[in-house]
Image (cartoon, rainbow, N blue to C red):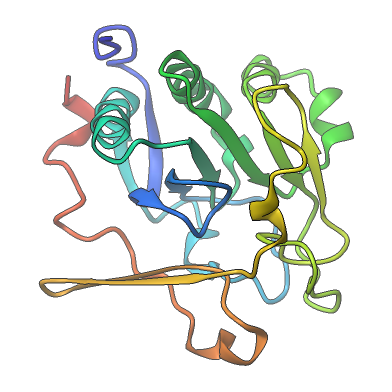
Length: 221
């Protein structure tokens, strides 16, 4: 299935991506961290992704091509959108979510906005991205309310919403312990996942490596 022509003009500001991870949601998932966030949660684990001035401009068509390749190679279960704030770049990400659904992948999003705010939003892009979301983890991160029971959740005030029947609410993977993944490829170090509380001071996300970045990605077809 080809999406490149349809989405060739759509771009996002990208902070980091991984073709396959099991530390950012249930199953094997393509994970994408967007650059830029309107919130400033104290203790944010990705402070380098807050500014809208960082990251790299990449085309949705290029991202979709990487998603398709990974889905075939790794038998993916879904895609997870994090950041940064995914709903700050809703239109292009809605296109990515549509493409994920077209190849039978689920869409999971972590957002500082609550479900109620997103449901009542007037922006067409926000409405479209929300309609393509299968699992929403919502609410601002609160460092004073760390979550110790629910997997993949940062603080106890945040809620999990299963919005479609594409996902199983009683999936046993939600009850397992959080994991941290460390990758060292050539001179590129990437760390992702949810570390134990005592290890958070060692946790750093490394920006997208040159190996991961496409050349002139906003023009890729």
